Each structure stands twice: as structure tokens, then as C-alpha cells.
Image (cartoon, rainbow, N blue to C red; front, side):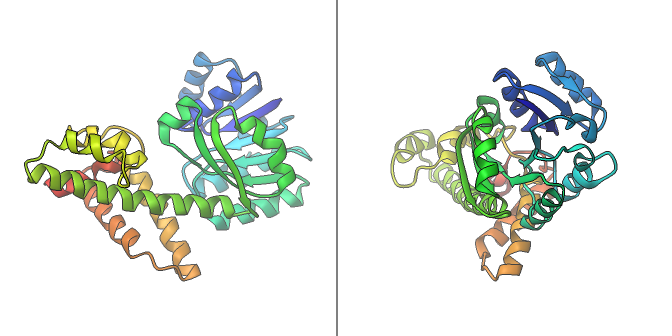
Length: 287
């Protein structure tokens, strides 16, 4: 299938690569040309100077950029996706963004006789590189049926949750869970060390019980070693939490733990840790 991928960041770069390795004809666009050229060195495909040029003739177009503003720019701005998107094509957005912009882009797509799916992902850089992402999708079931087999080249668990915006709302649920888990894990590691326990042995045991989680299995060793150069950056989590907390103000949800952890991440940023991964909440406790 002829496809386009807009945004070759930490997640988009390997995702676009999986599309290429699966035999699709891929045209990429990235605001930093150097990154696009690097991708072309690693994979076979083509590069376009503008999103509108990249999407010409594409049946499916994937976007994965930083935030609402970035997404609005590459889709609706001058030279954006919608200038080149052809009737019947489907835009699949993997950006973690607001449900509001997802619904707005869905309306733009409909007005141009195109489809739209909001499809944020979870699994981090490792999940993207290994092709085992979880993908939460909002949109029409017919559009999902066409896009899902293609997304399966980098997604392990792909689910249509509901109408437009449901994918982004589901990603917010995901981030709420992760924030609370990491704060609890950070306190547990801190407590184990202060208690004089062999923390490695402790977590080797409890990760197989009720306290176990992906975060515990994959992060307790690096946390114990004081290494925070893995996974999802604090700056990105704070961006996501701002989306979550804004949505909570609109729908009336009470998120006291999420709001508190957001402030703890602000402390990590103030310590110069904005680019550290989200398990660096422990670093805040040990300062």
C-alpha cells in the first residue's frame, strides 16, 4: 500500500521503518531534514519537502508529532496534510494530543471526504522499535478495518475504543495509571534502600505477585542503579498530564494523585531532569 508518515521522532522513526519493512511504499516528512535523510539511509522509501507533497496518492497517512499545535500545523497549516490528502484516504494520528483536536480533525477530514482515526500509542521507544505497541483508537469502524492490518506491523494490541476522541481519552487513562505506578514504585525503591534490604532480591520476588507491573519489571534495576536515560521523558509526561488535567476540569473527574505527581515531575524539571525518563521520580526523593 502507498502510505505516508509525518514525523520521525523517537516513536515515528521506527514505526515508519516497520511500515517499510512490511512492504509498503512509504513517503516520509520531518521538519528536520537531517532526520529524514538519516531515515532514508536506514530504510527504502522517499522523502517529501512538505506534508502536502508526502501524502499525494497515499491511501493511509500517519502522523506522530509533539503536541496539539504541531499536529494542527502539519495537518491544517500551509503545505499541510489536508492540502494534499486525496478523497477516500484515511489520516491516522499517533500523536498524544487532546480529544478536542481529534474531534476537530475528524470534522475536517469528513468535509474532504476522507477518514480520520485518533490512535495514540503506548509502549515507549522500545515498543516502537520492537513493533509491540498498544494502540488505542477512536473513529469509524470502516476506517479502522482498513488501517488496523497496516498498524499491526508495529502494534501488538490494537483496539477500536469508540467514536472520534476515544483514542485520546484512553491514552489519558493510560498516563494516569503510569504516573501513580511510578510514584509508588519510586517510594518502594526508596523505602527498600533506606531499610537496608537487598532491594534487587525484594523486587525479584514481588514483581511476580500482586504488586508487579510493567514498570517494576522493566525499571526497578535501572532505578536502583540511578540510571534514568530510558523511555519516556519527564517533559513529555508533563505535556501529557496537562492534557489529562485539562480534560478532567471539563468532565469533572477528580484526579488528586495525578495532580500531585505532576507537581513532583515539575520538581524533577527544576532539578534539571526534564529529559530524564519518568522513573526519575526516585531522584527527587533521594536529593
